[in-house]
Image (cartoon, rainbow, N blue to C red; front, side):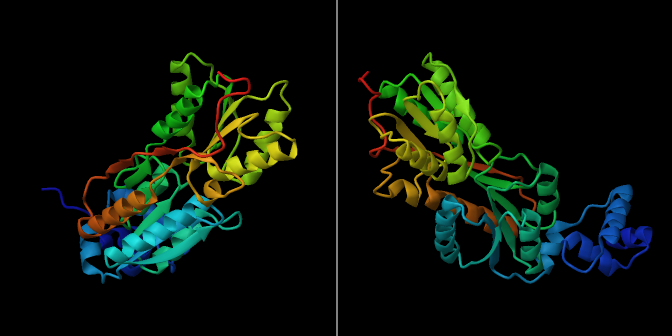
Length: 332
């Protein structure tokens, strides 16, 4: 019978104490970078894998779920409000840790690990797949609003390809044939939304046209400037999210263009910006209550059963039609 290597074996191989090995695999402060590298190398040599079930069952539950989110991200703010409601319904509390241009996701995660949260919810995570696998080996991890196949990670997200297709088909049904997708660059969900838009317009016999965009109003404004520099403005725009769409609308307004008379614009998220009277933005709605409910449920389930196979829950989007879309100039 093969004997599994233990934490003590790793400590002996690395020349450190068992306590230091525990610190490394719990990913909490107390070990230097060099020590962490030496311990992980020893564990790799021995084929040691932490016993997550024993660790989770032996430690005291905090009833706290850690949430990593992006500061200034309109959709994340609405999702957080729904997460608070869902957490309360499950008898859980939330600990928040934000990312910003000066604070990356690794720092945000580290702070929550130090608080010994029972599980982590990562909103739109930008961590690599190997990093997610490592994280899930030390704490139950749910990724929200991003696709990933990382082992041991639960995923809860909107079907973004279907959502972008809803936006494209809405514009096509109105009679638009000069369509552009303002994409989300490398943001979570951007690839799926590009694909959904492209497949829908190609199926209608319309060519795919994509301009670079991003998450923010500044990204949308830059995309709007690119579109205004063209010889002819497209008549229908499907924009990566509502924040970026707001930037596009601002640039169009300053150039004397009107929506939907000159150009129809569809956003994504159905955030507060989409509902503003000045925008009246047609948008693809993400069901934040469904996303939050599933995310909290998956986190709680994985705390109780840490060896569950990672699952993906897809939430269906819906189209919310407001005043920013209409037939193209001159009608159909």
